[in-house]
Image 1 (cartoon, rainbow, N blue to C red):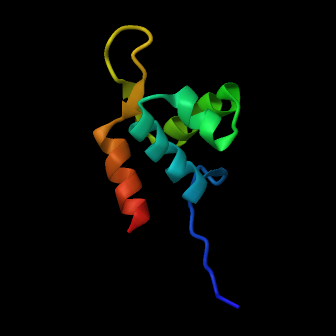
Image 2 (image 1 turned 60 degrees about the horizontal axis):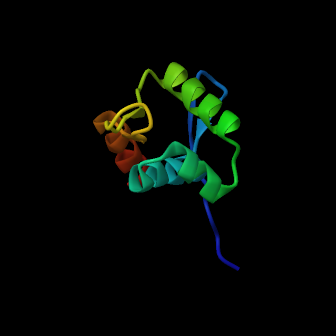
Length: 90
């Protein structure tokens, strides 16, 4: 038996940010694609996009930004998003 503790951040009393969402943001940054990251974790695009919009609204942090390269250029983490994930991981 191993004791484990789960930690998450709660915004607006109901929007949660935990290990799964942190991993998803890391995948977006690694792959340069929200769609690719969501596919890897088995989440629909609609659900994932809605989650990030809700998270950004509740936290006041912009997590994702266009990576450049035109309308299909993908997404990446913002500096604030990277900083937030890094602080969460500590």
